[in-house]
Length: 106
Image (cartoon, rainbow, N blue to C red; front, side):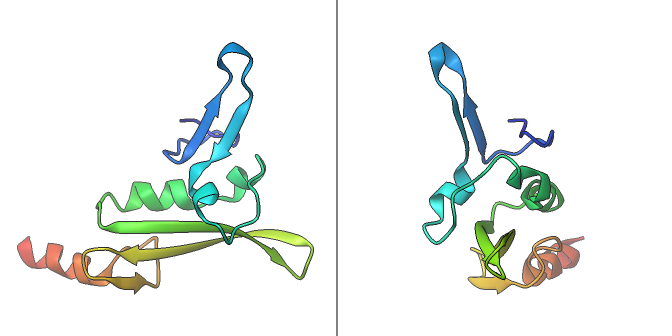
């Protein structure tokens, strides 16, 4: 679905049918340690780009809104490889073990 920032994201949801006014990021909503989502957060979010770069289903991404210095809102992205059960240091690059396996097949 298209976010308020204009990018497509599978975690964003909105519903204006029959008087409803629902806008939410389901990825942030699922994270209990996160602050509440605001529409302006979509402009700073890197999750759609991460998901486009890594088409594998083994990558799980967690997103949280945190306060920085008590004032500024910041988005924190954590990525995990479900296949190898490791934390991924660079979500944009994906799991290094999965990448090595793909290079070995080619």
